[in-house]
Image (cartoon, rainbow, N blue to C red; front, side):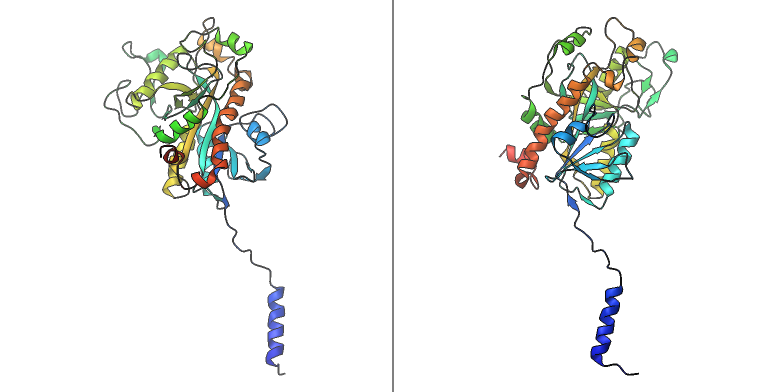
Length: 355
């Protein structure tokens, strides 16, 4: 049987039409701002808020993008703002941020990261409800520890740096993941942008502060520059506060000021470091904001053990004000970046601010 050229072409075209279409690669979603929350107590909207809910509702993060390799799906709006919940602890945080950073659907190469969550605070340096932008984050898990009942009388603590024989032994030996220095100019820019944000004081906050001793306990909530010890262990008490103060001072060579304690940020920051090596993100575009929901030590009328029994997330004395203030302060920075993306996409805010 013979076919004409025209007939052959027609049959070939029909055959091609019967083949399934091959999906063409789509352009990754450009992300401008990543908000990193650590927990949500219920649904993402409509109930008592955790760290995510206020961002979702007020910034209209209505687009849900499944992220099965992470702790929680991510949410976005049309302005380029994305929010993720890492889960509690450094392991959850590291895994969730790595899952996001390696997902080919997202272009994070120019994104700014705002880690925004609640924290414990040192009453000598910061008051309940206050917000602190960190310049330094120190890991509180990497180290040696002996039981408190076996600490030599001459030691101030049973926590030792890895590789050392006594607490705070010199010289300092920084291990990978032990110390994170945030971009100082970007942090200063964020602080200056938000330092006058009004943080509401209440009778309940004043009453809660009255049970503590410390230089900052009688101050109404304020925005500060202050540094963080990050540890998956939720530690509590005056002695542990003394350890954290010296631990941060030790690893920052006296350049840092301990203010807040959290459970995830070294995991998040370590993953961002690795993602930056892979040219997926810019590690110089990271901000850490923590707001004080509770103090890291006991009030004067309780022991540390008695006080620890009250330290449950939704029972913190400044829980709702701290959740609100994490959004109130962090949103100012996010809104500025989004509103002027034409300036900030390729030029850091600090470079523009100092011209």
